[in-house]
Image 1 (cartoon, rainbow, N blue to C red):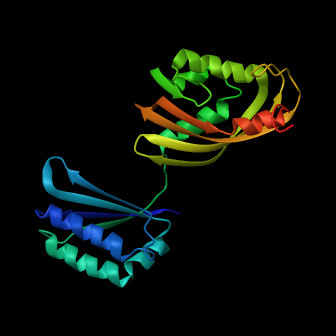
Image 2: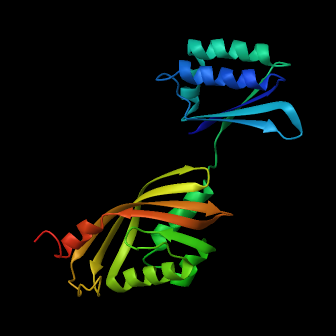
Image 3: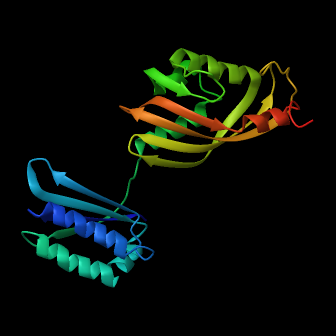
Length: 229
């Protein structure tokens, strides 16, 4: 179970504290078990800092605490604080990365959900970047693109992996389907096909406002008998 340690401290020496944390990252490289660290400053009290450090489990957190480098950094941290920092140990019982959830649902619904409901996840000023299109396109074009794929294939999308940073989610996916209708002038072949790709989605207010697509279109055409003959 994911474990989080919350460190609450007060210091008037923020720049020194920041450099100290950089030192800890450098000195524990290849040995630390922490997977994510976040430092936040209280808007109403600039001397009040909270650091949140995430670990895969409590046991991994204890391994990290037992590193000699961690102990030395802790002593230096105490010296920079106006008072003794407090530590809160938290077992994570719910972890929802909401943008990742929306992106996953978008792909899982791409081949089956009514298109108007599907596109409710996109903003009105949505912009689509697709190497198959000569120009960036908007919401109306995205709707026609989805309908075009549905006319050409009975398909589903499998999410293979996701990563998120700030307002962007990157999804690696696999498309599988059967060619049932015209696709780029190619009549229906009834061929079962598969294609892999990656999409970067940018979010605003919990909705997708921009997307960048990369996928193996040449591999798909080869499966349809157009390339590689």
